[in-house]
Length: 117
Length: 110
Image (cartoon, rainbow over all chains, first blue to last red; front, side, top):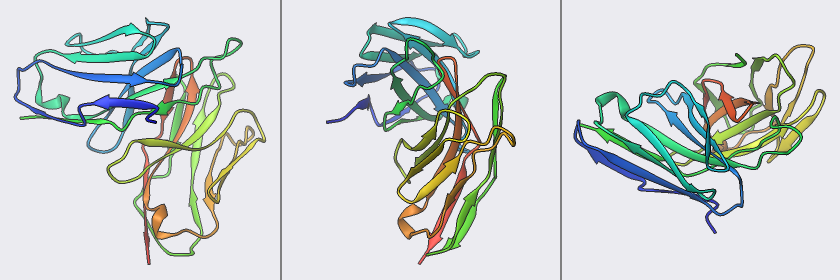
């Protein structure tokens, strides 16, 4: 059984288009994340959601709009795509310990490779 | 904010060689530390973790010890295999996010 799944795996589109990436986790976790991996493999947090509430928005342009319809899903919609948006986008999830959030092991999806032409 | 500095690669080794990837961190609190691995064309998998000082994480022959005095979490494996070829990421946990090092590409040749 897939723990964290993303669709699509590959996405090729033209500049200016709008696209969405879907993420689902079946681990019963309460926190979900989006990370961006650039062409040099560098990984950076974009968003964190806890119990469907936005917790972190790491200076991401407002063309990116995450949506969490329930705790098991966190989708990413991107408007007016730009060349610089080309990257691999990873969804992840974790369970936040009540006493502390500092021990969270995150489980990652397989990634969505977005190519903007 | 908290950050991770990781030895840059690429690293190329022969099978059965010893592998070390250095990782140091800066943090104001007491984060947990992780090593994740990304095999070609795949997502990230947790390789090992340590949640407090002096903890040793281990998995698949890899080890790393959380050293508070040197703020380090170096990854080691005594005898690498071709199947260990991957990108390795050191990471630390902050509130609701992981901060990653730049990644080290390791290639093991037969």
